[in-house]
Amino acid sequence: MESYAIPVMGVIHSSFHSLEDMPIQPVGALEVKGHVTVKPDFHEGLKDLEGFSHIYLIYVFHGAKREQMRVIPFMDTEERGVFATRSPLRPSHLGLSVVELLSVDGGRLEISGVDVLDGTPLLDIKPYIPAFDHRENVRSGWMQHDREEVISMRSDERFI
Image (cartoon, rainbow, N blue to C red; front, side, top):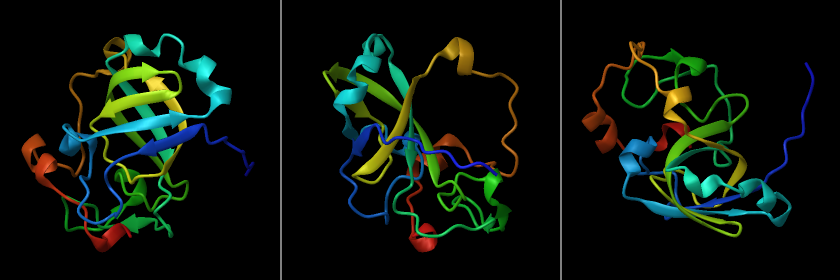
């Protein structure tokens, strides 16, 4: 299999300095503000981003030190294949979050709904576009908990 070098284009900053007791998804961190600092080489690519209310952040789970093909995910007690979960213990250690974009000032993005560890390496930013991204009639596999349960769930030691 080929190997690809993906540049780190910035850093995500949050109030979370420990993996324990963090929200497990952005929906559990809606009021949590943070910011992204984008390296100068990538500032030109931020043009017109401020017109979007939400963005995808693609990043590295830099706190994940191992990988597993089967995990017991948050919100469950049964072992699942890692690709049927959002566990950070995946082979690529890649994460994805949809956050609210509050402002863009040069290479600094103010965001809300940040659910990542402070200092997280940012690999990419993409705009959230409902006409592209929203789907009807979706299935959530084994994950049958409602939004309120996800909002209240916090991380524990299982993925440290």
